[in-house]
Length: 219
Image 1 (spheres, helix red, strand yellow):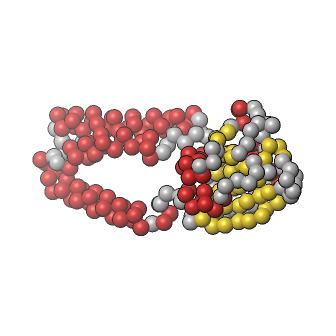
Image 2 (cartoon, one colour):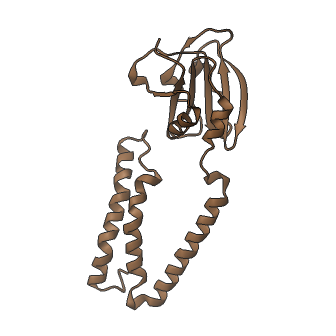
Image 3 (cartoon, rainbow, N blue to C red):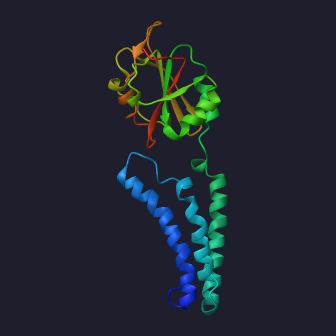
């Protein structure tokens, strides 16, 4: 396009291409400023797709690049079709089964914390229907729990004791599709302080980790 297009055609492609670059560049810039946040997500860069496709359409329909444009257009269509089929059949690209996770961890029998992916918390809250709440260390409450569940992306080593605190023992573990659940409890009916800040550093194969609480209030 830069070589075979005239000034008007290059200008016609430059405008949508600039918009696409801006739609991608802004989330990237925010991610550099706040590395702990998930700014570079599909839904955040999706607005770049339409202007990018317009720029590609301009380039593949240039009168002076008809054969090359046709070949590039056909290749892109074939690639897109193949990727759609692959995304539909690849287990690794499917959404986690949060409804099955809710069945696996069941209703809490005592105050419970569930440690998992931040972006999965809303889905898990919906399927639990237990009034679970999302909590962050900045709230400053001293939470007390009897159970702690860890939901990871695939099998990971058990969390170190410093995350749980003394007394917690693993009572079960279970594969739930691509996810893996470990369940820890205190012996007897007692409660223990929740190490909220430490739990958010748990290695669960997710970029960001959050904590849900069921049947609980601040201590």
